[in-house]
Amino acid sequence: MIAPAGSIAIVIPMLDEEKTLPGVIANIAALDPPPAEVIAVDGGSSDRSIEMARGAGFIVTATNQRGRGIQINRGVEAASAPMALVLHADTELPSDALAVVEQTLANSKIALGGFSPVLTGEKTRWGTTAHNWAKTYYGPALLRPHLFVRGLRLLFGDHAMFFRRDDFLRVGGCDPDMHIMEDVDLCLKLCRIGRVKMVKRIVTTSDRRIAEWGPLKANWIYMKCGFSWAFGRKYGLEKHYPDVR
Image 1 (cartoon, rainbow, N blue to C red):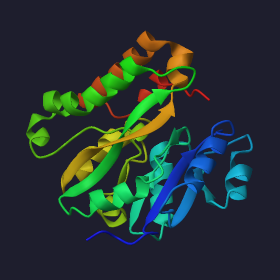
Image 2 (cartoon, rainbow, N blue to C red):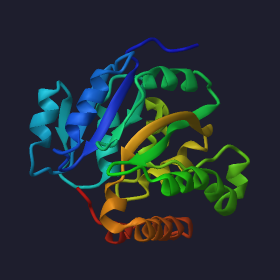
Image 3 (tube, rainbow, N blue to C red):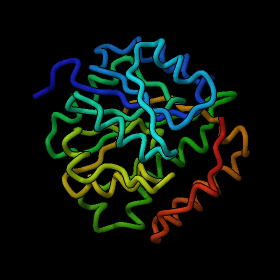
């Protein structure tokens, strides 16, 4: 059974996103059906992010500590809707995204879903986009094969991940001490209660890290952090993954 419109909260973890928020605000305003609520969780912005989010009518809350895991937990806990979609402030959704979420989570065997991201900005990064799509599958197949056959796929924040609020709380949410890779870690947690699915719909997300670092360095950083996490190193990886705004 498909849930009625207005059953999804959009949670936006943000930190100094003044440049990207106008696009996200316009994107959310064009969604059909609309979200039940939009909760922006600020991690200590020093720019106009909070002012802009409030001006857009978003519910704004803040954390005393930086870290997307902490911010996502705060946003989902504050939500009243039964489903949540975590949207990075540099990612934009198709206009019918929330209908896709409802249809996907109508299947009780799916615990977590995400879209297929295309990295774009000064130009579209087709090589990295293709690799990101592939590692959703080859990552768990190589590193967690016993879970891959049970439906594990590795999604990242750029996938605009979505789930049932009760399931998220049931598995303990994101690890608050993880500053990156908290999204992949959440895939492992939710795979305990259902499949992880990447839907065949596209979201666009900023290529700002590739533009800053270059494609080779960016993909090396992604791989280094991913394999470090896969082999048991969950904390301190953010030193290899500096902020790019």
